[in-house]
Image (cartoon, rainbow, N blue to C red; front, top):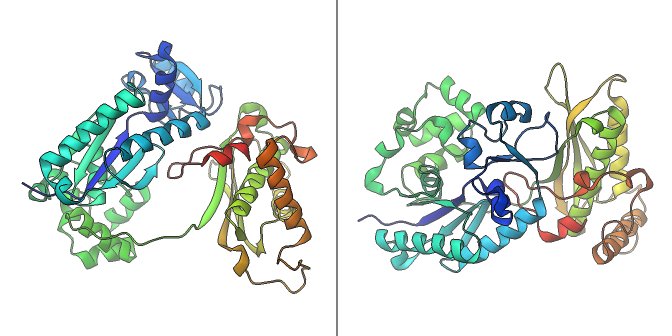
Amino acid sequence: MGRFSYLTIDFNSYFASVEQQVSPALRGRPVAVVPVMSDTTSAIAASYEAKAFGVKTGTRIWEAKRMCPGLVLVPARHELYVDVHERLKEEVQNHVPLLSTGSIDEFTCKLIGDECEAENARQIARNMKAGIRKNVGECLNSSIGIAPTRTLSKIASDMQKPNGLTLIEQKDLPHILFPLKLTDLPGIASNMEARLHRAGVTSIEQLMSLEPKAARHVWGSVGGERYWYELHGIDVPKAADGRRSVGHSRVLSPKMRGRNDARFVARSLLLKCATRIRRLELVAGGFGLAVHPEYGNREPIVHESRIAPTQDSFTLLEHLDQFWNELPKKSGPFRKVSVWLYRLSEEGKRARDLFVETRADGFTKQETLWRSIDKLVARYGRETVTLASQKDLGLQYLGAKIAFTRVPDAQEFRE
């Protein structure tokens, strides 16, 4: 029998399943979770009952209603999903130590010792599923993949849904992967698929037949070679990677898509980014903003610029307003706005601007002011202190949201 090193658990239709768990009236019904209650938005999750009608993540709601007349729309409750995520994490760790969190609905564990034996690994997975049903919720079905490498365990977790359990052994490789499409593999989306096609790789079989150095060339980095080894069942330890950026995005409701309203949303997202980097004891040396037009050419208008390292909200807002004023006067309405801070570094190690006055502790007066505001908000709630220009903005634009590969911590919902 083969030996296994990794177990990945992926929760099926996570947001929709959580809604069905906490609201029994939704069980057995087609459910779509949406960012805002509007037919012009898209589903961010669909229950398996909705998927049976063809509704999936990204389906426009007007189209989803046509496909599934009985569809129930539920507004996203990100704080709830994070709370259940933490409970699931605790239950998973009751069975085997957690190695990493892939996303809000995915965990990977490292198996050691006799846990690596096939039947023992399979029993751990069964016990984990039973513990989740008993201690967290019967609606929270999961698919588990067990394999010699982290990448293969992720692939295995996608092979049988819903509620699957798949083991990939060394002896199964590479043939077990051949029925899959390139885009079924983690990390291969449309852009990477196009790059592989340009290199003459159009199938999993051709990908597996590459030499490691050829994979490095196609990827344009050593990551391609590492990926090749992982696909072939050879475990390559993952290098530690520091935080590279902090960002927030929002899909706008129809009433907030005008130029001025979209700007207020962007400002609020930027204020949240600034609060986060102060809490993480970082400063940003770069600012980015993207606005996605609602009509015509749907390519976003993107701006990035390097700035003097700062964590001051006023300074960052000045950069945003400067770019916003440079947008064409008749631009808009906008469908979505995104902001991000990058070139992050530790606040105590930033290079100082000789023309900016700082206190003895290394912070500017404005940074010190905002750090004090953060403490008040953390203690008394986010409505304690707010900019006058932002005070009437709905909480759907101020609350923390879950990104695909990042789970907010509890403090972010109070910022």
